[in-house]
Image (cartoon, rainbow, N blue to C red; front, side):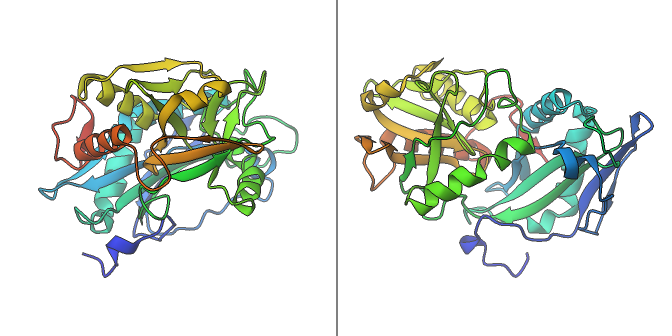
Length: 338
C-alpha cells in the first residue's frame, strides 16, 4: 500500500497514477484510453471556458473487509450523467462504456484505494466538457470525457458531528432550469453563498424553492432528509433538486431493511420545528447530521442536538456504509466488484 496516513486524509485532490480520457469528434466517441498526464490542454476559446458547457459525476470505490474493491451503484451515475448531458446539449457518453471506464481507472489505481476500516475511500470524478473554440452562444461540436480518482477522507471534518445550516437570501435553481442535472454552473452560482455562510459561522446553506420561497429543497452540495417524531423518513419532493443516488438508496434502506416508513413530499419551512432529526446526504458525506437551521435569526433546533448524530440517522448511516463495505448483504445490483 501507499505511504499515506489513510486515517487522516482530508477531502481534497491528490494526483494518482492514471486517468481515463475519451474524445468526441465527427459525431462519435473514440474508444478512450488510460493516460498518466493530469493536464488538460484546450483552446482558449473552448466552449467550456466561454459558456460553461460541462457536467460531472461523483462516486466512490471502497475496500471491503475481505479486501475486495467495489463501487456503489455506478449504473445510476451513468444514467444521471446521460440525463445531464442531454439537458446541456452534449453527446451522451454510453452508460455501458461509462461503467467500463470506471472499472478501468479504479483497477489501474488499485493501490490508491484506502484500506478497510480507515474511514477513507477512493473518490471517482467522471466529467465532460465542450472542447472546440466557439464565439457565438451555441453548443460545442467536440467534447472530452475524463475520469480521475483521488483518495479522500470524510467530507465534513469532525465526522458525524452535527452541523448548522442557514437559509440564505439566494436561490439555488429556477423552476424548469437545470437544478435537476449535475451541471458545473449549478455549483458555480453557489460559491458566493457558501463563502458568505462560512463567514457568518454556518456550515452550509439550505435553499428554499425559488418560486415561492416557502418549501425546503436542498443544500448547495447535498440532498436533505428529515426524521419525524414517529420515526418516519421524509425528504423533499421537487423537480429542481438533484436526484441523489445516496438519498434514493437511504430511502430504500429505511423501508426495506429498517422497516421504517419513507416518504418523498413537499416540505414547508414551517414544518422544520416538527422534525426530531435532520441530515444531509450525498456521495461525498454519505450522511452528515444537522443540529439546527437558522432562518434570518429564527432557529429550528432539532431534538437530536448539536453533540451527536440522531438515533435513526445513525442507523441509516451504519446500514448504508455497512452495505458499501461488504459487512451487510446488499440489495441486488448495488455493488459492482472491480
